[in-house]
Image (cartoon, rainbow, N blue to C red):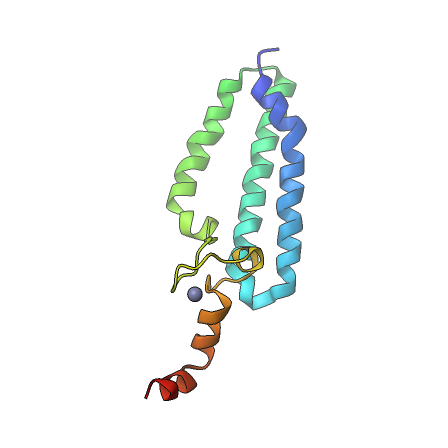
Length: 131
Ligand SMILES: [Zn+2]
């Protein structure tokens, strides 16, 4: 066979697609707090789905893996242009650079650690302590 990459993708990326959709469903619980990240996982799931559809097409038409480059040629520029929308996930707090826990990485649009979010929620009390 002349398309080992497409065969691998068509056989395995279905599970990547399902995994991203499961994360998307879990984000639903957090509603507005995870709105951007929920959209991002949806777009990423669509991208993975289209990638595996291309791979299945290549396998069934018995054409070369190089046709996957057409998908890459479209997907990579789109990804670069919309990278902030597609990857809003950060591993560190936006304010204090502390490492975020797994739940905050996936489910909090604010990208703040628990301490910084608490500070942001009660700024008046914080100012009173400073004075
Ligand atoms: Zn912080």
